[in-house]
Image (cartoon, rainbow, N blue to C red):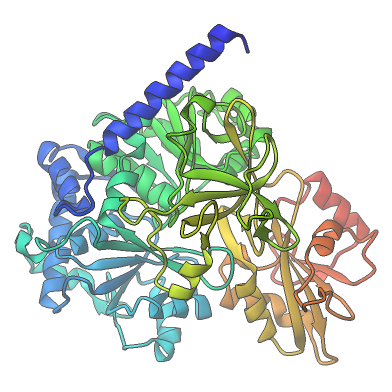
Length: 595
């Protein structure tokens, strides 16, 4: 790149960064201003704007708030108080947003439950937040009924139509649509909790990340200045609203700008461009896997007939980035980096393919709270020098991305509900005695121009189907199946897919029967967490300290030509595992099987 091009790029970057900072400037965590107040302000300015296009109908901002107000009055009638938790288990719908918004009006914390969960994972997510009630839909309510005996505190079950739980629609029908008195939340500040958003983290069951009002006020504003958003925009969201990308970046951006959301209950690759074109989408919210699914679809007559001017999201890999832009003619993609609970936020303002963000050399002091440190892959720990402190990586060297923790920052690491899990994400005495840094769990590298590139997830967590998959959780479920002695779960690469597919290496007893294993796992785990491959070894591979070895297993993968142990494969559109043959292995590599 020539010097003038570099200067032009740096000026653009600086201006874009200034715009983002201007949006969040002045957010005081100690002030009595909540995200609820910001949303109410939007509604006062744009009451007649369409808030949602959903399944053939529309909902204005005024109607959206009327629904939320009824939710608030319902919670008051039920006796819930500020600081109480109510769990929300739903697929995407306007009522999803109205529910957490309404509850926030009286200081109630909403726990956003992954709608794919069931069994032990669902039980854990509900118990860890001590929920007082569960709001769900008729199709998901039976999952709650199956685990009722395992739930702490006997939370009340409400579903919208009363098919299984108490009838929420009937309860709301007689309640007022006016705003509840603000005195119910007047004592709260930006430091108080707004939501629980779950993340699998690096190990174990899903963790409940505490999201404060101040953090939400910053996160909801990200898309406003970067896209930028206006009240005339229409944002197409197919990602689940219980995730930050869809629920905060997309939905949150709309709620603070007066834009409309074109909301789909679930992502559909075949209907994507129909929706985007027919509803006049101007902004799309993506994850990398979504983009790959769209590229795998046959040519669509409307794939270039849309009015989309910008996409914002994360996880878009370099191998499909340009393909996506060229085929679908989306003029601008804004790749962002962040985590549900973390204190690191990066953005690729200028569309550098493959980069998740940039820290130019001339702004290193301003970004001094974000570093990449040398990392030992085998030990899964940052490397420390002779002085006991961590070491910054060299150019283009992969290391763990970390962010310095400041207790007074509105978007700092606020931790999980589980204190032990919180402590595991904190790295102490990093560059000086007493400092504390958030561990992202991600390996990153930085080039000489300052661009930062994602390399891999650290340790036990891998991504598949747009979700983080915690291997320890799967191992625990597997170990409960008759005949399984040990279970070592890891992710393996599959050509032309994002993330890694789940594979489990087992040691088994004589009475092990694989025939019912797939059905058992489908009951206990979300669909994306069920391993695609099962390998049975004569004995578990462990280190000298009895930790399971994964590096060698990952390298061998599911290649039946080099693995002498039996390998089973869960074929698409089948309910069980079948022995993997060399012919089928070749079909997977060629992409004939779409996993």
